[in-house]
Image (cartoon, rainbow, N blue to C red):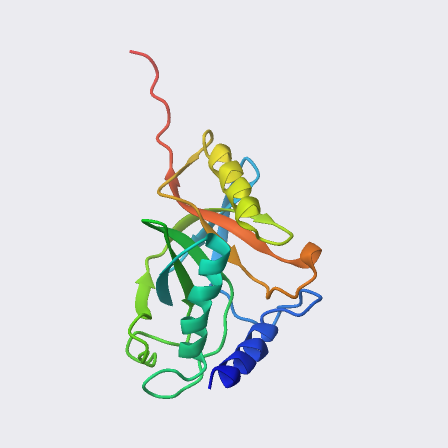
Length: 202
């Protein structure tokens, strides 16, 4: 059983990018670029349907651990035994107490009513509210140190300018581990709001 799941996982993740980093046919949530701030792109997203799990552990290991039940869900581990297309990115955010939330966004054609329900109770179906995000892209293997460095750079970029961070940044990952590192697309992102303009002195 596990072998078949892993074979399916390799096949589906392979569709999200090859060793050459090709991912053109894989759906990702629609967004509109509405600005730039100190090297970060500001994107506006609509509401997004997602499946997520929360797992403990070190960041890289938690990403893998969270991936497995989500992959099981989209490969037919649901009440309808229906396969759900893989999308990008895979999102990972801190969940407190040393835990991590790992999230797959669902294809845009689904609604909460039409998406199959997971059989694994650890998999939650949620709607991620739309909003504005500052996003910074980077290449290479997304180790914990590499992600932490880019998160720090993103937050520093938002310390001035028209946009300010709302909450903690998260990682977005677009390619499977076997993709050539220099072609891997990774991003760090944080929800933002427009900063109130400074008031002139009275």
